[in-house]
Image (cartoon, rainbow, N blue to C red; front, side, top):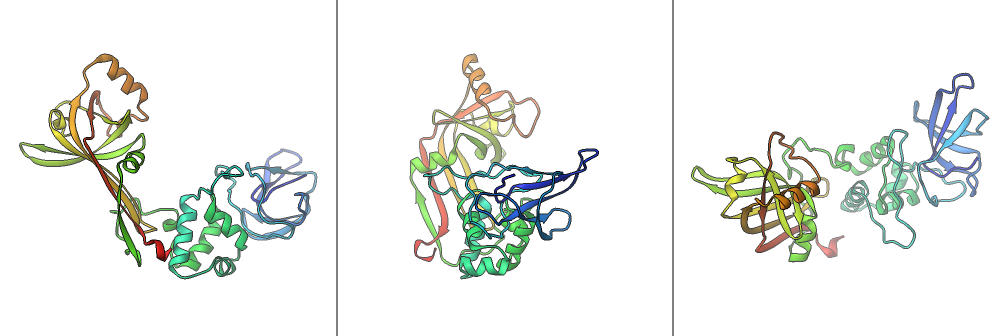
Length: 309
């Protein structure tokens, strides 16, 4: 039997095969991953030293080389009901996940070192480094401990507050507003998502959200005839996409301006429908494709000043 940090030890009933108990392996005592293990049981959240018997097996969560060595005792990403961690292949630059970025930002904001933060949260600095530098899905217990140390909430670390208007948090201590170039703007538009189209109608201007695609540099969205977005056809319109990270008090916005046209050629309509990533969230019959050809592409980003990171 061999395990990695973050794998789960499952103990089954010899008679029925049903799971009697399971827990996250948070400590290894041998570098080769053989028993015994420090296990945090899912039913009690307590950590005990376990010598697995014949009724136990390891549920691997897709980890590669585990961080830490013999004697390491730290919570590791991964939950029994969650997806396996994604660890960047060797040689690739770290690609931190949203939770890790928020933890790192809150830690720096409070002037705490990794060592001090880890000590207060009762995790190892090595694990905190992993969490901040790699995409991870830490357990609720780990997030509760970190939130208490950082003076925030688990919801904030997870990017919660989706039911509230964005931007209610405090500004960064040293914010910096940067202008974005066309290439970065196009990259942030990505290939699809939700954006806002601004149109002028006889009743007055209106801004409405739409599901959109980016196909060969052109913005496309589906709507219904005589709807508000349909009023964009034949006019020059503005199309805006943005992202606000409430926990980090930062974000970006991209504005595209250009003429809007209705797509009538059957082949082009079929191709747009084929390449669409999602049906319109608003539902209903929305088979009218409108495209916007950006003649101007500008954007801005709010982040922490370089010298203050």
